[in-house]
Image 1 (tube, rainbow, N blue to C red):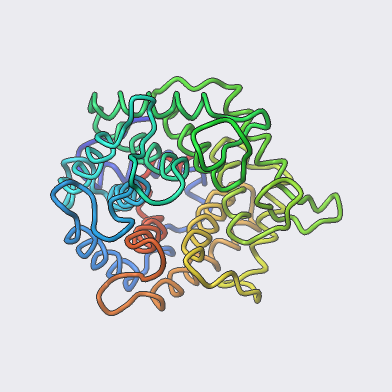
Image 2: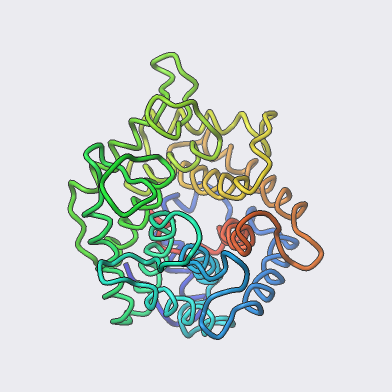
Length: 348
């Protein structure tokens, strides 16, 4: 899927026409928060200002392909296409950093980068897919194609992925980001085998703790594992991005998320995984609006509350603190980017 390249207003018109949710289902102005947009503007300036000439960022994690990928997504989510927009040059530099991180086997991860390779690889592949859909840069396409081939080759027999680029065991978190990356690449024109997508969907579904089976409706880290807030957001997001909007797993997951703050009473984990969970809960509930009035009502309550929660966590320097350096700021910017409708991965 490609987008018009005639300025932000034209892009917005096109994207609104392609949304998962019918325009009559909500008033987009309800999502726009003046303080939220001001916070995003400030954070974008801080994020762009910290980029290094290589296209990476500072700190232990800022030079990793996963964090650079999330930063690139955050910039694109606010209309900064490669080479276009206030920070378009920053986006282009970040994407070229990811291209230079590509290994001969397609892995977007270099020796010496911290953390699990496949999680970084999934985030970086997603960023390249969105960037390729905007720029049609051959270097991006070539790196993206190899990255997808590696994901396809390392899927295990259950349909999932784990931390290393090999077919071994699997977990929901690593599987979700590979599934999202493949869906984005497919939308951008890369050929992805149907059986690979189907296998990933089967694994995500296997992690669901179904209400019909007397369980709580959430998603576990692995099949049979206990449910969690962040994992449930990730599970319903990935299923809906794969085209499964009206399934028991999504309905159960939405009800499960309703139990947690910022709209419910239960407190989700309060460490660096909060930003991961907040991002996936936001995207999962945003997509779920297509399932009917109840989910639309949930969204109307949830999103302003989530924005307020983000504003309360933002520090005076225009940043969000937590683990993994720039990661919390980039994830927060992606949440604040929802009213923009710029990233194709968040369209039906």
